[in-house]
Amino acid sequence: MRKRNVILVATVALVLAMVFAGPACAAEKKFFAITTGGTGGTYYPLGGLLAQALTERVPEVLVTGQAGNASVANCNLIKDHQIESAFVQNNVAFSAYEGKDQFAGKPVKNLRGIASLYPETIQIVARTDSGIKSLKDIKGKKLIPGDRGSGTEVDTLNILSVYNLTYKDFAGVDWLGFSGAAQRLQDKQADVTFTTAGWPTAAITELSMSTDIVLVPIEEDMIVKITKSFPFYSKVIIPKGTYKGMTTDVPTITTMAQWVVDEQVPEDLVYKLTKALWEKGKGGQSGADVMAKVHAQGKNVQLKTALSGMAIPLHAGAAKYYKEAGLIK
Image 1 (cartoon, rainbow, N blue to C red):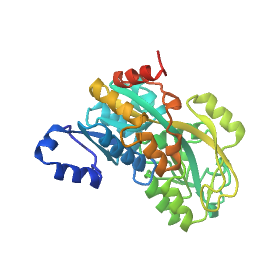
Image 2: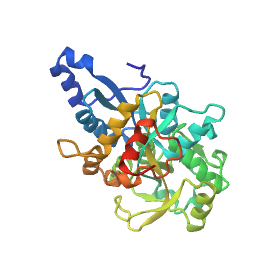
Image 3: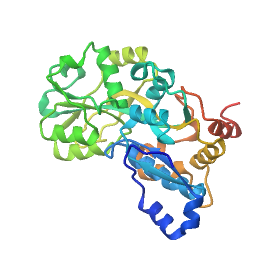
Image 4: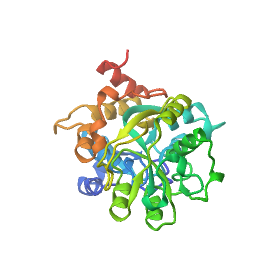
């Protein structure tokens, strides 16, 4: 079993399976981790559910979902062979593999793709009483750009750069995950935060129940500039009613959440995991089916978009499956 530097969040079902199966069964099975993000985001619940589904379908492994510090940290864990797989943003995966941005001089060349899962939307949330109505209003405010080194912070910095803003342009900057950021807004210790996750995001939903918030739109001309500067982004609309008090559609940008893996994981195992993600088993459900039942973004996990935004090499096991499925030659 590989060394873990993050807290393992195994489901009760998996623990019970080991207890009642007996020592022989436990000895035969190996752990396989999917490291996700903070508990207030979208990675965490979807990763846990996928782990349960895969454990039922791939008998030689116990797949566990574990909380993590999101994209950048997850790529570094794979680089050091401390985890087998993770959920990350596609733009961060690209930077990691190529050794760019935060990974300059430290490329993650053992990073491989399994699948693109769903769009991750940059959601910019401000307290209504902050007076922020557009991104042009955030200068001089108290900002939370996401957790330090997270994919959300990468997105924040990319967007700020197009607006010619840096951290020095804010009254204060603090780095927190989704739940921590929501708490700071609720306590009026911050004015605005960026969240990159599939909507609805639990932390924002909970915040909207206790605090009057506004989802800050990105202006159309600025979306054009952002997507020109960073082509891995695309425009998306968050529909009205997504959160309490949200009465209009909000234009913003999106990237893709991806499931990535260490190249060292055996080809046969990754092939079986990829197949279990997309194909129905004896129980009649694929991993994607399970995710679709519990979260709005789970419905966007579809085979037809499995390779969308895949800018890193596929793992040999995943490539084998997609060749059989006719997605690649």
